[in-house]
Amino acid sequence: MQILHPFAGSVQQYAERLADPDYYRPGQCPQCQAKHPLTAHGFYTRTLIDTAFDGVIRVRRYLCNACQRTVSLLPEFILPYLRSSLIVIALFLVAHLLGGQSLEAAARTAPPPMPYQRGQFWIRRFRAQAEPLCAALAALTQPTPASDFVHRALTMLESTGWIAAHRFLFAGVRCHLLGWPRGLAPDGRRAAFSSSAAAV
Ligand SMILES: [Zn+2]
Image (cartoon, rainbow, N blue to C red):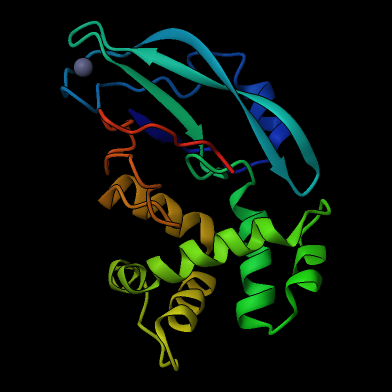
């Protein structure tokens, strides 16, 4: 399973901290609740596009010796199964859906330059997710009056802070800010019969 790495610095600072397995070693298993610190269990790599980074990062894995399952610690500036960082996605969505910028202009707002079609994919997912997001975020912030769920969800995310909202949604209610991709179970593990869940 994936849990969030409680880290909010730059990508470079994340990479430096990652060298020490003790830094964020979970003190107990989030899956079987065994009260033993987990054992460092290597890394996997994934691509990441952030405002000042476009490359590959490592994600640390830990193993629970009681249930023999692994836990990976995803840095909280990342949404599972999406290549772009949460901040890049947020900049684009806010520029287009709240700021009224064209798709092309919004794509230029969020560095590095990207095809606007990538943003359209985020918009589709965000629209589908807006109503449940409003309901979930009501635990964190006052629902704001808005003409529709998309604007209300964006305003609530802006007032909560996107990373704080993601942390709450993911850890608290296992909710993906843009909705889990089809074929993935709500806990983020690949469903038994899914054929593809490529990161876009
Ligand atoms: Zn366990």
